[in-house]
Structures are given as structure tokens and as C-alpha cells.
Length: 132
Image 1 (cartoon, rainbow, N blue to C red):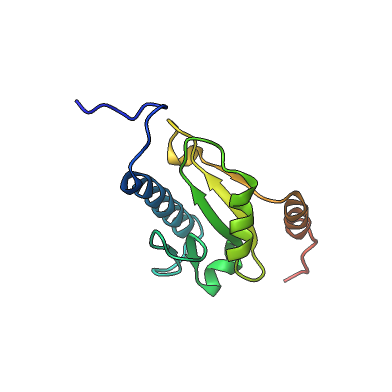
Image 2: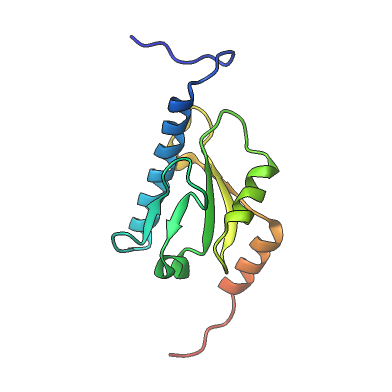
């Protein structure tokens, strides 16, 4: 039986990257399924590459207008993670951080973004639509 890493121990870089990659792959899969996107419209960026963690086609950005920074870490990500998402964001998307807390499933991940972005998204979702 393999022992887990305790809170006092440091995780190997390769293991940490694998955790992050697993979260990114999960997020890309869920977004693709939920928004019925085609192959290649939503993909996880390879670890260590510059840019957003979840790459979106123009079509994907229309239905999922977020630039995601994924964090699968022991502690809640700092505001620096949101700044990283802002620096890498696609135009006309909302920068956000998705964090998977320890000992929780991928679907229990938490998303956070700027309050003004939330208000603007809410207003956009609640705008009256013209008759079709």
C-alpha cells in the first residue's frame, strides 16, 4: 500500500504537474460536453506552456466566455493566480481561477473571478432578448 504525502512533505514537481494536468483535462472535458463543442474547440494546454490553461476556439469562447487558470493545490490560490489569468486572458472573456481543494472530487472545484465581472455577466444574462 502506497503512503500519501503528508502536509509536512513536499510533492515532487512531476506529481504536482500531473495533478494540475488532471484538473485541466477534466475542465476541458466537462466544458466540451456541457456546451456540446466539437473536437478541438476546448483543450487543455500542455503543462509549462504560456497562456490560458484551457484553450478555446472562437466558437467555444462564444458559449463559454472564460479564460481559465486551473489550480490543483493544497492551499487556496492567491490573488496572483487571478492576475495570471488576467494576463493570459482571451479578448472579451472573463478571467477566472478554478481551484480543486484537497481531498475533494474534480466536480467540487471552486471558481472565482472579479465581482464586477460577475455583475456584468449577470446583467448580460438577464438582458431582455428580442423576439425571434
